[in-house]
Structures are given as structure tokens and as C-alpha cells.
Length: 355
Image 1 (cartoon, rainbow, N blue to C red):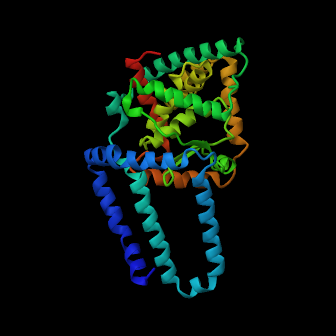
Image 2: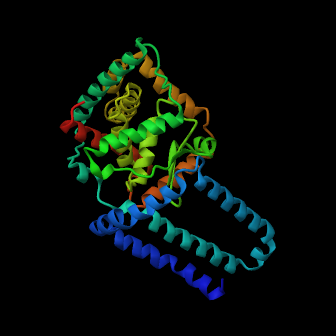
Image 3: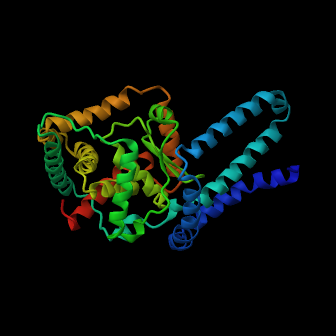
């Protein structure tokens, strides 16, 4: 590649950023021409291309790029030190290409209209509504746990393999699409990540590879959390970028499955977020609600806590800080806290659709 072309690509990064922010301020354009125009074509093509392969092509791609970068640094270390400006230009050129590709293949979805508009939901932040809804969730979660285990003191263990859970999640989407056609999902590409252990150390349950459009689920997750994460990552594939929105989709898809284990996975997932919000508002109310939980439900929550705690490490906060900054840079002002914003969507939805 000629030097002037490399320089031109590198210099295009700043205009790209300005253009993306300007286009992002026109939500209707993004919704019409990208989220319902360009993106579905790109997404379905890559899901068709890679979905049938049992392992993650995206993970292989990332590994290859990391190894190539390390090899390049090792081989050209002295040259880099002598030509720092040229190296900086080359790095900026790579970032420019990645930035363009990211937004073409998925990133503009960060600027689409909120999913609440599609569901015609009116979100509120009323604390009493939160407490009332949490009580309802506790009842549903307890009932479902008891139905499965026949003993309120036993935790729930989902007996299905990852593949079976993926297949059941696809059936859930097919069922939900009859009521909400905009959640139609074709050419599935959902896989456990090759990097599941690394994801766990970083504190992530899954991710969408925006360059191959493969949905990745952390294969080490406790099984009772696996179905909702699968539904969440498919939600990203459908073009919903906000984490609270894909949390909501993951819950909705899992709760609408006829399988009792899936219903339990959904209710307990939503309950965890609701209890966290209750605790932030009033610890006395939180403590009172906690006494209402079946012992088996508490054991499942403890199972999740033990799972993440055993992988705690000094780098996890760094990875989460990077992701937090990434989300804020991509139109999610709450950053990593946006996951918790699912609660208002849940309350608004179940006002119209009682538990």
C-alpha cells in the first residue's frame, strides 16, 4: 500500500468520527436506512456464511490478528523505534479501517430508536412500583423453583446441553415473533466462545462479534443463567445494541418458552436486577424481600456469586472500565450500568402483560 494512501486512510479517522456522531443524532435515519436497511442484509449474510460452523470464526480471527500483531512488533521492533511517526500512522490507519468496518457491520445500531417505542412501553422510576413488581417476581420464581425441585430448599439445575438450550432459544424466538414480528430471527449463528475462560476472567457472560455477526455465550456459565444470555446475544444480532434492551429481549424470549426450566431462568434473572434496585433504594425493604425467597433460589444466586468470585483477578476491573468507556462512547451514557436499566422495561411490559 502506498504511503500517501496509508496517510489518507489514517487521516480519515477524525472525519469518520464526526460523521458518525452527526448521523447518530438523526435517529429516524438510522432506524430507517441502517437498522431496517443495510444492517439486516449484512447481518443475515454473515450469519448464513458462518452460522453452520460449530466453532467461532470470530474467535479464530481475533487470535490470528493478535498473533500477527505480536509477530510484527517482535520482527520490526528496531524499525518501529527509528520510525515512530510511521508506526503511529500505520496504527491509526488500522484503527480507521476497523472503525469504518465496525459501524458498517453493526455499530450504527447504537443510535437507533429505543426498543420501548416498538413495544409501546411507558417507563417509570416509581420505587413502590418496583417493590410491588419484585414481590410478584419473587412469587413466580418461588413457584417455578418448587415446581421443578419439589423442595423449596433445593437449587435448580437445568439438565440440558448447550446445544439443546440454543435450539430451545431459537424455538422461543419463533414463538415470540408471532406476537412481535420485529424479533424475527433467521439464519442462526449462536455458539459457545472458544475464549470462555478468558471471558470469565474478564467478567463477561457473552458477546457479539460485530465483524462476523456470531453470537458468543460463555460456555462456563452455570446452566440456569445460560438461556437468558443466549437470548440476550441473539438480541444484539437482531440489531439491538443497548444492554438494557438486550437484557429485556433475553428475559422475554426465555420467559415465553413453555419449558419450566427456561421460565425459572428468566424469572430469577429479572429478580436479581430488581432486588439490586430495591437495595439501592431501601436496604430495610430489601432485607424484608430477601426473607421471602425460597432457600433453593438463594442457592442459585449464591451459585452465580461463587462462579464469578472464583475468577476474580486484578485485571477484571480494567476490562470492565474499558467496556464502560466503550459503551459511553457509543451513545450509552450510563455505560456498564445500562445493564441495570432493564428493570424499568420489565415493569412497563408487565403492566400490560401481567406475570
